[in-house]
Length: 136
Image (cartoon, rainbow, N blue to C red; front, side):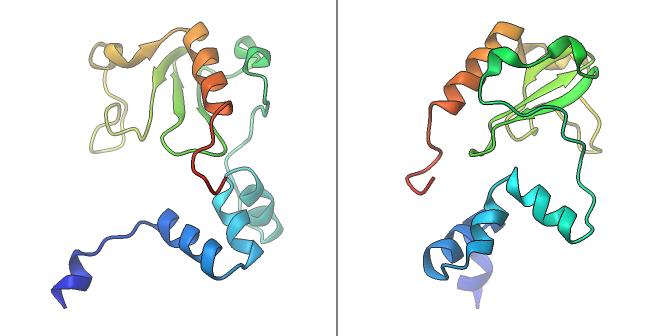
């Protein structure tokens, strides 16, 4: 029994396995951050407000967005940027920027993760040019 207790597979890995072996198209939808929103809405599940979608990062209307939001790549993992009080931070999975209680680290502690608007656009371009996995 210890073998099964020590085997940890995250939800994403389970979904990918099912995509390969089950061939149920629903699993492809569940893995896609953008298309799962429509699926959730069709089932009456409320999702976070979507502020902007683009495949051209230079068109992001930074001045029109609220002071706090996340920029996320649709096809990757840990490809996240946090805008917090109009400053940008390379967020990844958030472990380096969020306290145990879910609050944001103070800006002094988070300063080493801060990036410029030009770096935000550069990271987004890089992410869009890459496949997260061979199965994308």
